Amino acid sequence: MDLSVDLDTRGDRVGAIYRALLEAIRSGRVAVGDRLPPSRVLARDLGVARNTVATAYERLVAEGLLEARVGDGTYVGDLAAPAPAPRHPGALDPRPGWTFRPVPVSGEGPSPPYDFRAGIPDAELFPFDTWRRLVAAELRRGAHHPGRYASPAGHPDLRAAIARHVALSRGVAADPDDVVVTHGTQQALDLVARVLVEPGDVVAVEDPGYPFARELLASYGARVVPVPVDADGLVVDELPPRVRLVFTTPSHQFPLGPPLSLARRQALLEHANRHRVAIVEDDYDSEFRYTERPLETLQALDRHGRVVYLGTFSKSLVPALRAGYLVAPRSLRDALVGARQLADGFGSPHEQAALARFVADGQLARHVRRARAVYGERRELLLRELARLLPGLEVAPSVAGLHVSATFREPTDDAAVVAAALEEGVAVEALSAYAVAAPVTGLVLGYGAVETESITPGLERLARLLASGRAR
Image (tube, rainbow, N blue to C red; front, side):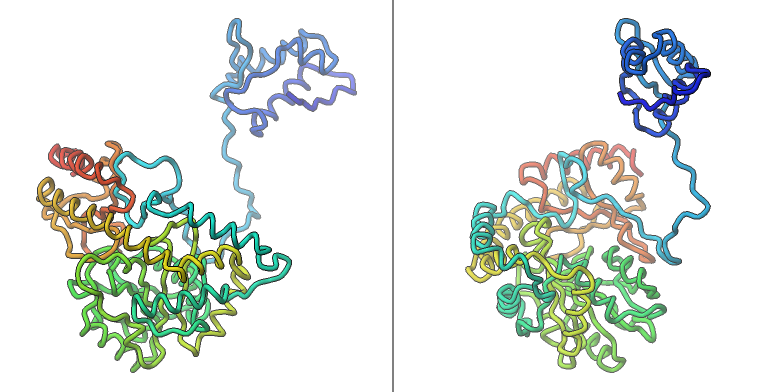
C-alpha cells in the first residue's frame, strides 16, 4: 500500500498517519474489504515505531472504519464506503429540456434462463466463420487506405449492395447515391432529426411506439405528439395540425404488430404531400415474414419525395455489427450526408466492404432464409403455448418480426408481472412501457433470443406466476 504521509516536521505522527489513512479510505483509494499492510510493515516503510502505526489503526477501528480480524489482519470495514461526492455549486448541467438517461440494454449482465425480450436475434444463427473470412480478406487488401478519411455516406460497394437488396426484397426505389450507411437505425433517425427538426416543431409518433424515437426527437426540442394505433396501424385522421414529421413503423407496427393498411398508407402520403410533412419509415424487421408478402413500402408508393426510409442489419444479422442505412429523397441527400460527416465522420471501411460482399454474394439472403425458418418454428410454438397456457392474454395479430404482443383481458399491472417474472428467471417486457397515452397493459414476448426448447417451460413459469396472483 502506498501511503503519502508528511512526517518531515515534528509533531503528532499518530495523527498524521491517521489522517492519511482516513483520506485514502474516504477517497476510495482503498476500498471496503481491502486488507491493510501489517502495522510492522507499514511502520518500516514509513520509518516510524510500530506502536505509532498500531495506535492509528486502533483509532480507525474504534470509529468503525477498520476491522481487526484476529489472526488474519486489518481490513477496511463496511462503514468506510465513501459517501457520494457533494454536488459542486458550479457543476455543469445538461441544457434545458435534456432529460434522457441511459437505460439498461440486453448486453448488460447475464441473460436470464428464459429470455423473451423483444428485438434480440439469435447470435448462434449468424455465420461468424464466413464473416471472419470476409473481414480478414478486406484487411489483407490493405484496410482500404487506413491513412485516409473515407466517405461519410459509406463504402460505395455497400451502398450499391444495399440499393440492390432493398429494391429486390422491399421494392424500394433507390440509387446507390440515395443510400447513407449508418450505425444502426438510431443514428439514421438522429441524422434526419438534425436536418429536419427545429425546436418547437410538432412531430407525430405511434402510441404505443418506439421509445427511443420519442426521446431522440424530443431531445432536438420537438413537441412530440403520440398518435393512436388500431388494427390498421397508425390512425392518420388523428395526426396533429401543423405536424412537421411523422415517425412510423408501417410494415410491422412496433410493438403491437399490425401493418399499416393500404388505405392508411395512401392517406398518410396524401396528407404528407398536401401539408409538406416528412415521413420517416422505419422498416426494422420486415425480412422475417411468415405469411403473405408485405404491402408496398411507403417509400415505393411515394411520388413526391416525402419519405425517408430506414433499414437495419441489427435484426437480420447481429446488433454488435451496428450496421444500418437510410434511403434519402434526392432533395435531402447532401444534407443527410453532411449530417453524417458532422456526427462521426465515417464508418469502418473494411467492415463495410465485408458487409458489401456478404450482401452481394447472396450470404445475407441465405442467412435470412435459414433464420426465418428457425424463428417461424419458435413463433408457432410460442403462439400455440400462449393460447394453451395463458388464456388471460389476447395476442395481437402479427405476421412478421421477432416478437408478439398480447394484452391482458382483465386489469393487470404489467410492470409488476415483468418484475415478478424476472425473479423467476423469465424475462418479458411490459406493453405499457411503450405507451404514452394509450391505455394498454400486456406483455411483449420476443422469440429471437429464447431457445426453442425453453419456450414451453418459460411460459409455464409465467402461467404459474399469474395464476398465483402475486403480480396483480
